[in-house]
Image (cartoon, rainbow, N blue to C red; front, side):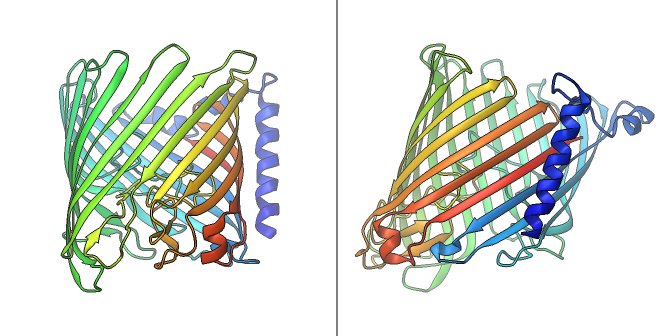
Length: 440
């Protein structure tokens, strides 16, 4: 409760400052950097920047267990330096300090805490305005809606890769080829990648293959030196992923997105055969406050037989999964059938309110329920607990008074279905957050 009071004081003071700064409710500092005085004293090709984020979270009935509650404060500070002596040459470095406080159940460890570490450090030849660029070093990788590869910036520690990236651009097309290894976050140690744990790929984007649409074919190749087979033995992972993402508009108010992914390969001697899909439509509605309705469906295959030497559970790779399948993040894109709706209104241009509903089933009753990052939460190997996971109701409000400032609040409650009632303690799960972010 002490953490709750501290954050509420911060929230009230920040909001009061914002509203008092300008009668219109738009603070003058919301579009200014506190580092402007420093940047004015340096050459134009040297720039300092950063981000400060403070977020309070509360989880009730963790693991669907009665009384397994925790409330804690997440703090994250980033400081970066960009040096661009020529339009075609950029050097970038960023440090990060991420911490958790007043926690009782969640650990003082990633993804909650990683104190004082190097987050990014790369050299780039070329720029977004040029047809060719190459970036070498520690960096973010993010493609599409980041369902497979992303920075996962909602997590307090987030994600980066040690990578080499090549971008080719034309007026209506872009092709990105990369070779990378994900950085393993360890609190108290210098973060480093694991040798042999690699992700290679080509992600492309074409604007005119379909009218009013963007088509993004991609191919990814994941390697890992040590994974466990269904038999319990260990071996190497060699997984190949092919897919396409298509997004576009039918009318000025009606838009759509679809993403389909196929996975094949070998996992410690087990053959891989998995797939997943995402389908979504968004319809702008008439009326005040710019109402909008979104309806979506997701599917990700599961393993129908955990002892047949064939791995059917979809691999989410390195996603940015927050709020894609429910604000509480208890369900991810593995062994799942998902239906969701979102209704949004904007009482002000910079203020959005959303109400959401989700319902899920397991794709295979003999596989388990996986969280948003892809971690196994509950499983019944015999498949006798049913397939209906449950429903979730969410509410969220986001306010962006300027390009550098974001305030948000959200709450989600998961109502257990037959599977969770039979295969776990079966208590409803509630997640709440309050956040303030300032980029400078």
